[in-house]
Length: 162
Image 1: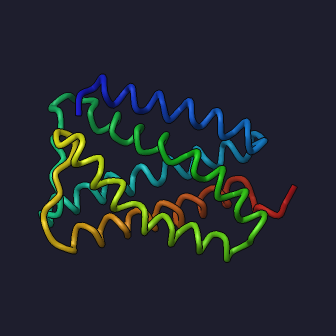
Image 2: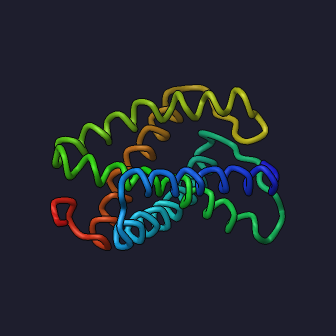
């Protein structure tokens, strides 16, 4: 993935974040919580990428530029932040059952999403054959909801609080 592609994707996800924040009528603390959740999940995603590469589950071509890891983290952090504004609304409406459903749905649709991206953009990621990479991706997507929403709740407070 080139620097320009990473910046373009991050910019598009930032625009999505602004739209979702507007549509969910997010206040400052909720926006801060979503950004904090994204920042923490960005670190987890970088660790997951490193673990998956060490295990041979996938390979992500990386630039040798000194700022690549920062851009990679920023891309992860910005891309998941809109999700936390949505999960906050789901938790407000449906409680913990809604979050469990969101976690399961995320784990189910995550691997096909990533494998589709890998098929369309093989220069971004290449998956190894077998079930292990699929289960690893599903686990990362489940962590996306659990960890990020948990951090958001720590910053913004529970969803039933006005």
